[in-house]
Image (cartoon, rainbow, N blue to C red; front, side, top):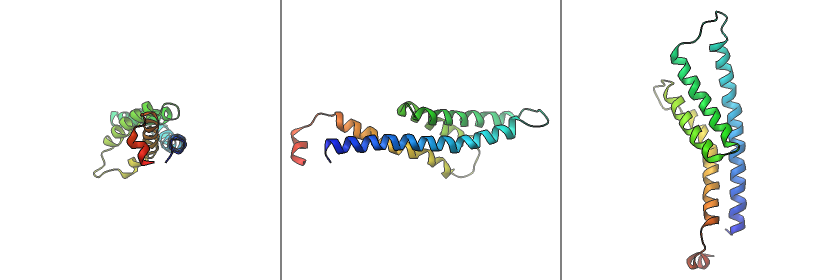
Length: 132
């Protein structure tokens, strides 16, 4: 691949990662709003137990990470990975929550973008010219 092809593929991967993060933000955001109304807008006016507050906070952190990915991919990835790991570890499932892997989709696209950006910045060597 030429430098230009790598650059174009990298930019396409970046925007695909951002679009995927936006879709996941909408997907997980709908769950968050539904759970907010279920736990915090109760007719009896009672607040939920502490065992609900922690997962809701981590769920919010996951949403913040996905939102950050729309502008700052590296910071958003870090926050989202921490939030996702914390959220699904507090859920108390007996087996691995495979749905958590959905959040890795934008990370894969950003990873390709970061690799393409790194390849575009590194100096061209004689060996690289011979490979072309």
